[in-house]
Image 1 (tube, helix red, strand yellow):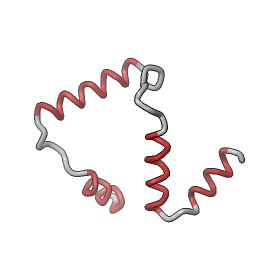
Image 2 (image 1 turned 180 degrees about the horizontal axis):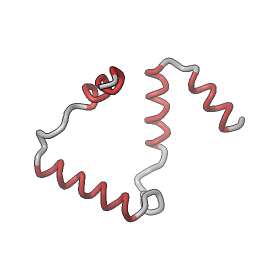
Image 3 (image 1 turned 90 degrees about the vertical axis):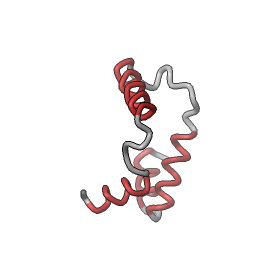
Image 4 (image 1 turned 180 degrees about the vertical axis):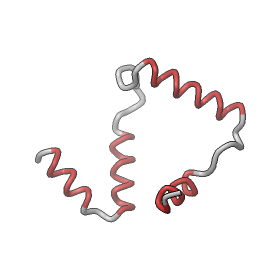
Length: 73
């Protein structure tokens, strides 16, 4: 099966199943990110993690963010 055929099949799934599929694919990458992120991306991730740790009440829950994205806010 080609990548395009898989993508087309995945796009036919209900949205919730698409989300689950994406999460399962991401989870399958494992925890070894040595070759996955560039040094710049790693630095940005670290910066954001530090900002989150400094102010854990900043931001909004994922479900709320997802709804706002869907509504085009």
